[in-house]
Amino acid sequence: MNSTNERESFSERLQQALKNAHYSPDSPTRLAREFNIRFEGRPITVHAARKWLVGEAIPTQEKLRMIAQWLGVPADWLRFGGADAPGAQAEGGASARFESADVKLIADLQRLDEHHRQLAREFIRMLVRLNHQPPAK
Image (cartoon, rainbow, N blue to C red; front, side, top):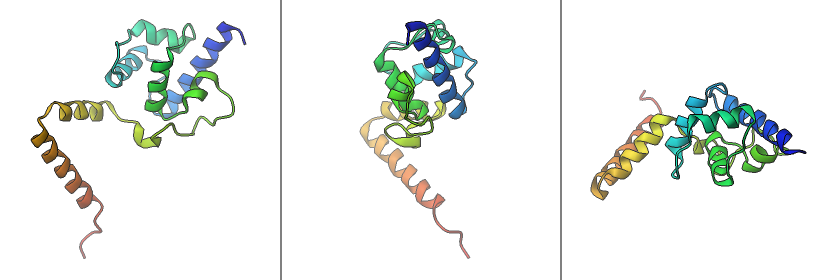
């Protein structure tokens, strides 16, 4: 497969993974924003995201792995296609996908001192237990 076809095929798989994860495959601005929220390295530009979406470029392996984890697809499938089903889950499964608000909440949690982080964890665990209790009769 020549490099033009490789980039175009990657673009198609990226767009499919975005659709499956309920993101618009037509918005490089949204792709860049969602990517930058999750990626710890140097942020990407909207122009770079557009190039990924239109098949003009393929992200580095590090960026590609993060995209795959975020969208819940195997990194190998995202990069090369092939036998891996697009619905298959990356490491961590569907729970590895977070909405923007969740990512921001986790970042806020990390900015707290250890005592307040522990309080926040206990509060969340309590809410989860309450949410999973059977209704009172």
